[in-house]
Amino acid sequence: MIYLRNLLFYPIFYIGSIFFVTASVVSIPIGPVPLRRAVAAWSRYHRNCLRLLIGIEIKVEGQLAQEPVFYAVRHESFFEAIDAPAMYQTPVTFAKHELSIIPGWGRAAKAYGMIFVERDQGAKALRKMVSEARRYSQAGRPLVIYPEGTRTPHGQPGKLQAGFAGLYKLIGLPVVPVAVNSGPLYHRFWKRPGTITYRIGEKIPPGLPRAEIEARVNAAINALN
Image 1 (cartoon, rainbow, N blue to C red):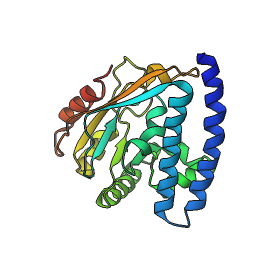
Image 2 (cartoon, rainbow, N blue to C red):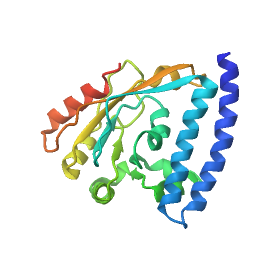
Image 3 (cartoon, rainbow, N blue to C red):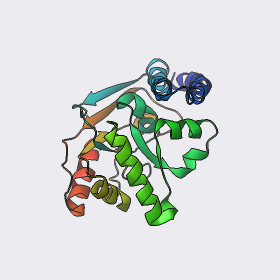
Image 4 (tube, rainbow, N blue to C red):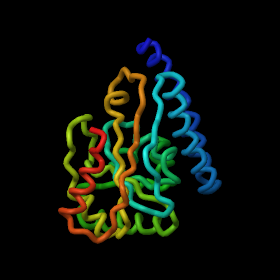
């Protein structure tokens, strides 16, 4: 049954995604509202495909912030990246620069508000990211970062990338750590039924020393390991 569910999920989700990506690109010249609706609809479509075809339910423990914050999210699979527009209110996500070259999707992501990380560009890239992040947060949008920098297997504590503490210091927003346990169900070709849980941690104020913010975030995002 698991194999049959997956054989249905992949073509239905990816063929359907072509429609949503096309709708997103077409929405760009119209304005930000229809573009954001198209992106959120794609993310909800992904959730529905998981629920109806794979049997994955999503549970949220805790409350999301009602003001712009810096969400630091555990990264175990592509699930939490695809799910971000459905989980948060028009989030601005930090993502690796390579994703920006995906035809259609990269253009829509840039227009939507994704911040692409150019790790080899040094201080110039950091200043650009901070400027973009401040502009989006001042417009009322939350920021989402995966501070481990890459997917980390479930059960293994990840190591936070050095850039996270620098962004935290320069942007000056409270941090809300988010644990998620998607790995056992989603991070494999044969996805399995079950429940993926988000656990929203306590808000951490800005201005803490690097060692403290890293320790608190690391502990909170690993709460479901």
